[in-house]
Amino acid sequence: MFSTKAIELKSAAELACLRRGAEILSEALAAVMAAARPGSATLELDRIAAAELSRRKAKAAFLGYHGFPASLCVSINDEIIHGIPSASRKLREGDLVSLDLGCIYEGFYTDVAVTVGAGPVNPEAARLMKATREALDAGIAAMRPDGRLGDVSRAVQEHAEAAGFSVVREFVGHGIGRALHEDPPVPNFGKAGTGPRLTAGLVLAIEPMVNAGGWEARTLEDGWTCVTKDGSLSAHFEHTVAMTAQGPEVLTWHGRRP
Ligand code: MG
Image (cartoon, rainbow, N blue to C red; front, side, top):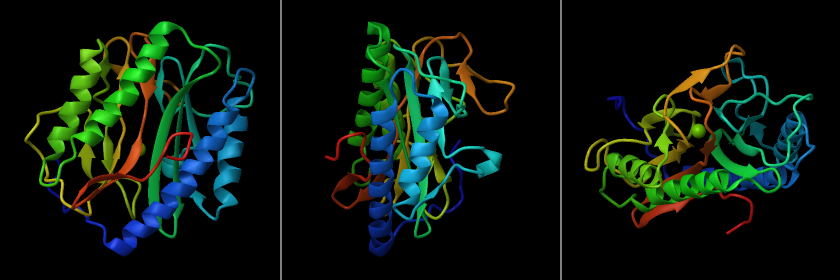
């Protein structure tokens, strides 16, 4: 599963750049989150994301990536990831809405995702959102200097499964920096004590995708939208996180600046 290619560690100067990019990205995401209300077309959210990045001199990372047609991914209810914004798709009250955004700033990529409710959501959806956010937090908390990547994967999986949910296998997190997807892959499942060492300078996009039902996924005919095979709800949270000598530094944030 893990690549044997070299993992690129970031210098202090590169980390400073990633920090600034992550700040821009998080501010743009906050604007999108504020607009994710019942009645909003998903394309409006995309337009907001694009405008917020552009006025901060950052480029949308997903637009044109392998031909993806938008700046933002909007994945609703049983959609796991890669939902394509559309003018005709309007959020409905109770929708579970995953918003995934990436940017390029001064040559460096950062990546963030959050799941929000369009208005109030049902108790199962609320529990799924909470468990997925906590699974991400548990993965980050497992990043200890000289620990292994498998510690992160295991912590995410354990938290999600303890809540009675399952983690998607087909898509994983990734290293990030001069490219959107760098080594190493960061699965949301695995074994503690295995995989690459968590060396200072390692920068990861950790992104649990958690399904209320089974972990299996399928891709729709648009070639992008990935949904749960059993039609169950799915949630997605992601942070760009740098490993430092002292421990993890979370570069992105969700909604309110920490
Ligand atoms: Mg990502």
